[in-house]
Amino acid sequence: MAQRVKAMARLPGMDIVIPLFDRFEPLDAIAPYEILAYVPGATVRFVTAEPGPVQDVLGSMPVHGPDEAPG
Image (cartoon, rainbow, N blue to C red; front, side, top):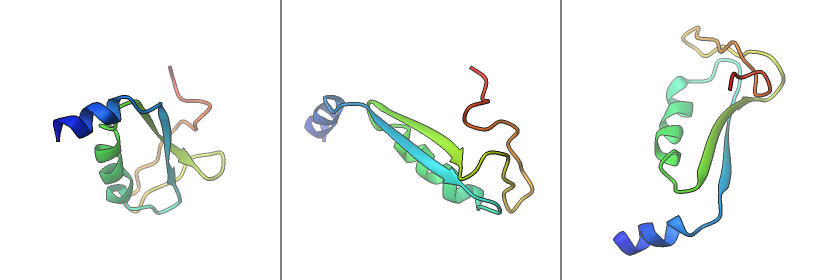
């Protein structure tokens, strides 16, 4: 297992995008993020298919798009 982790650390960076659509299930976005965030060299982002906020089935709504996010 340790050898596999060391080999992964030598991989080039990877940009992983998790798309969010209207009425998405939060677990469908958060669960993959929780796993993929540990991939060495990976950057994980949430994006919407079109500009503007989307609302999940629970009523949560982000207020920033990919180009408007702070910082």
